[in-house]
Amino acid sequence: MPNDLMEWRPFREVSRLRREMDRFWDDYFGSGRRGLQPLQAEFAPAVDVKETAEAVVVKAEVPGMDAKEINIAVTGDVLTIKGEKKSEREEKEENYHLVERSYGSFSRSLTLPAAVDLDKIEAKYDKGVLTVTCPKKEEVKPKAIEIKTA
Image (tube, rainbow, N blue to C red):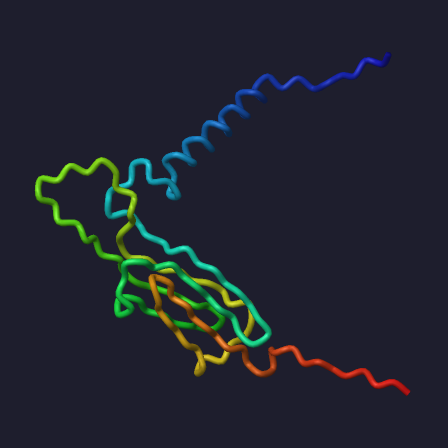
């Protein structure tokens, strides 16, 4: 049985433990967590981006907002959705046990996966879901080529 030698690294376990502890603290107290954030925390709506043969469709969840509070802009191939969700609370000696709803301004910028026709973009807002339909430019749409047989 051959003897395999391993290099001895006295601080290897300490380094691994440190990385795991750093990850733990980032997961709990980092920007993505609400552990110690104030009630007016940053709000970022969930977004779906779907591409069809004709268009790129972006859906964003922005419940509790008025359509007038939402701004949409396209610069180059980047779609930006901005807005502000205002707090509805009136504190009159109320004792909150849990506050999970988010408020504040937000800005989401998404790179569109295809070139779109800026003049034909449409936006609709229904039941808390913003749908932005960006029709593709003609040169980007797939063109079927017929194969001729002899």
